[in-house]
Image 1 (cartoon, rainbow, N blue to C red):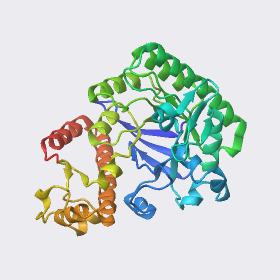
Image 2 (image 1 turned 90 degrees about the horizontal axis):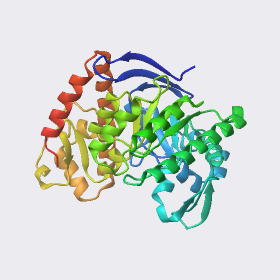
Image 3 (image 1 turned 135 degrees about the horizontal axis):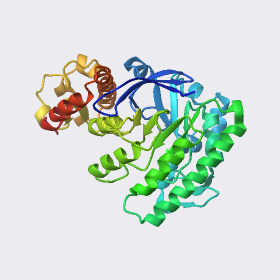
Length: 376
């Protein structure tokens, strides 16, 4: 039985409206997921995230394994109890973080050996161990360990990375099945293949056919040009089963999100919204505005008309400019709430457009305004 129920499909695109059923409640899709790498979304209370409407956030297996460690998490019954978050949690396997360590890791069929970025200590991740860690975390959606590759590598290297990713996917399923009822979440497989169509097709079809309740499309938004992202996403998505929820990892700007939705993607995440907020970058319908700029010093208006976040309800752009220039903590907190509120509201508008069978028109109109507006 599928964990996603598709309610409506847009006739002009592959966009779709659904309900994702998870252990800690339902999630309307398409949905953006805030990233809480260390068990917290930076700069915002969990209560505020709940009030906005989010019921699915991310944490990272690599980081939670290093700190606070599985012993601490186990003593609290998992991350939900430790972080006092009663919504759903998706955990990345840590594959991307290990990939980012470059010279500090070594990949073999057995697993990956890496050095901690914290203290240089050596660790080993096997696909089985990563499933076990996420079982302790209590992930509602857990990801398999995979080999993420940068754009521009040779075909033979991409093929080898896909071979190992497939091997690890098979072993991850075996470990999940061995754990039985101790593994309470949903294990998603990850499509790889770099930017080679033959490998992408093979990977998408293979992972889709395996015993995973959901499929993630990995290896995108890793430094490639935007047109490469869009082309390879569209190509890959056509080979991923429509019977399961589909997740593109690491995208968070409105234009990338809309491209994903257009190709039938249900879930996406990125640190962009919160990272940008801490530096005074805020989403609006007229583009991203940088409130550090002197142009906002006397601006009495809200960041975004009609936005229900605390910043837009109670404060001016001028006050926000002041907070950011002074490096006041409140500035980053208000900006973070705004960006997450903005993306949540954007997804509501997206879902309504799909419901009314007008997603293409919505996307085109939104991007015309977004690109034409003040960007800075």
